[in-house]
Image 1 (cartoon, rainbow, N blue to C red):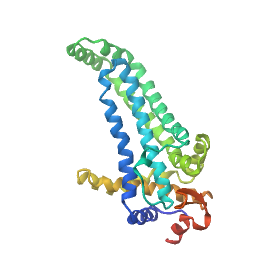
Image 2: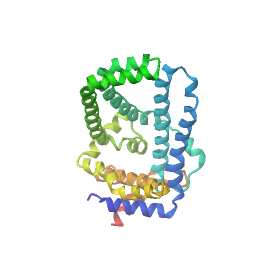
Image 3: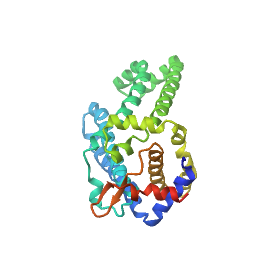
Image 4: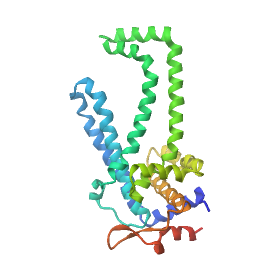
Length: 282
């Protein structure tokens, strides 16, 4: 039987009630470290040739972003299986599965970049003129002339980009569980893509609308000037993890992993499966 959003959120709350510091360190500190690293590296961009900035900046941003996502998921999976405590050095620990983890974010970046490229190609003459402009007055004149003559083209391209982006986003929902599968099941990126597609079959809208179950918490974060996000974001990430575990079990792949405190590893042991207690609670 499929778990409802409420059941999944209650499971996450119960897990976090034991020790909130763990998901806080994993999600907020772990993810934040790589955001800070990216911001620090960005301070050196002005020293680079202008042409290189447009190439290096997105590449470095992608790398630091993926490293942050990897650390969050890699530390979160053992936590979901019962691990207690997170060492600071674990926030810099990367395993062999990182190379597989990288594939999906890169593919996603390529898809959105391709959509942007398709839309901006007709605008290349405008961008080239702006790039060659020698003064602000000349740039303003170029933009004014373009808007007077080709405003409809600009609007059409904008709408096309929105449509392409929405289409890509809806397709990518099928691969939302990819990061969890790569780390949890230690499979290749190809297998993870196939499994994510399989897992979301019959669960597409369940996965798509899951973030909306946290709108109240996100609004609370805004109302509290960001303070509420320190709880809401770890709560959301833990809940997403349990959504994955729930779907994994429903598809017949659950019931084999627990965290062994003696070996500090996730091991096979269906008798002590945390999903068993997850089921018995509801």
